Image (cartoon, rainbow, N blue to C red; front, top):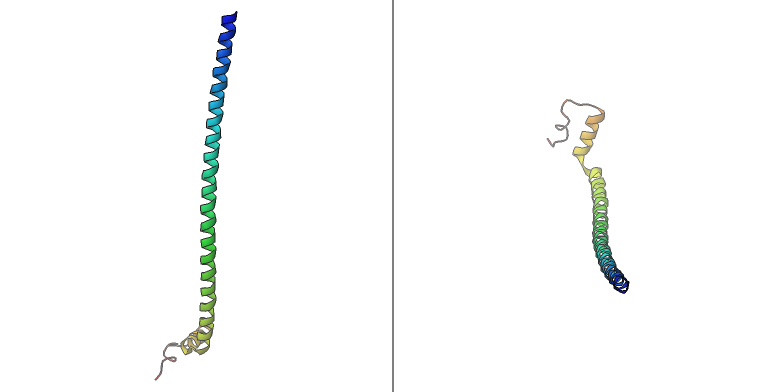
Length: 100
């Protein structure tokens, strides 16, 4: 019985050690997974910030170009003739815009 009891104790010790190693491996795996997710998150945050900055620049450029276009529409004779052509058809709309 002493031998059997000693054998059971050995089995328990080995099982505990095995479980301890498995738990350690599992924690390490979870930590690596969390680290990887955190790195991906940081990368996406940087990309998001960069894209927001780019959108801001493009929005400013669009506003500027819209203002330039509005100013140009006020003085462009070709545009006025073309607009007249759309509302009142003429035989040759561009000929009336060109200087004679």
